Image 1 (cartoon, helix red, strand yellow):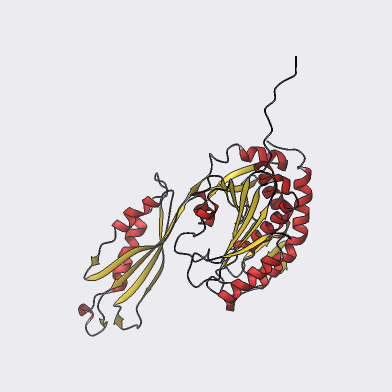
Image 2 (cartoon, rainbow, N blue to C red):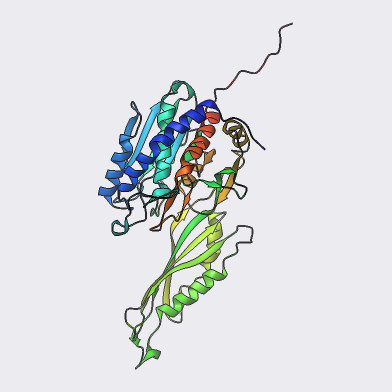
Length: 391
């Protein structure tokens, strides 16, 4: 059990970050920036750019998804050794019509994208500013803020650009353990989105239902088969969950077309293949076309962080635990090139992707301490081995 004083720099820097984070979060949340909306993304990029440290080199990178605003990359050069990437996203899932600016509700800061993940962006910006004042501690620190994380279907285009970095820290929402200890995410499942298209034959549902071939019934059977393939207790911990079904246009017509969407999660991407194989090309003369429209890798940094986290906990002065999360994140993409990838460094909150999304205001400073303690340990200059006392 770690219980001691917090590293002096970690404590003072986190206090400075928290002092500015509220205003920066309010400015970021004030911008409605659903994925794919270029104007909203550009406004969010402008807010983030204004909060960068002086001397940061700014570059706009082509987004991984067509039709999106260019991503923001800011780099700070140092005089030491070690390179770290801070990672986040500026897009949300909330449409303009449902957007909510930031409001305080007791200890909660409520607003669209507050926890997923503009609160994390505010912390990442603060961390970059603090590191910029200590250039002797690193060779380079980069901040990458993408505009398409919530709806991207393909791979993250920037992975190879940062492949030589020593570490990646992603600022998705943070969490506590059941015992109340700070946790960061070191393991995530692979994620896939399965889309099934059905094409049957329409017919009058009252006069000649037997002449129709129902896409709805075929998709209902596919949904049953997908659900039956779920095996959360198995070796790959596969979950296969039908989530959205659209079929039919009129109450008195056998539906000829339809679409089914399912969410797949497992420790390995290959674990999704048996689910796809369970879907035939045809059911009761209804043609079926099944494909993965989104496929994100998993990440497992438990071994890479086994020594780092206890050492960072000593700087933090309290326990720091590596945890697992089922949701997908860009950290999973980066982990394929940067073994030491840690996620969940953002503030704590809840109700992500909903109108009531919130962030715990009191978590901003302690979660900034977590990120700074991890980075301080990562970027600690190597000490020469002791040669003992001269004889």
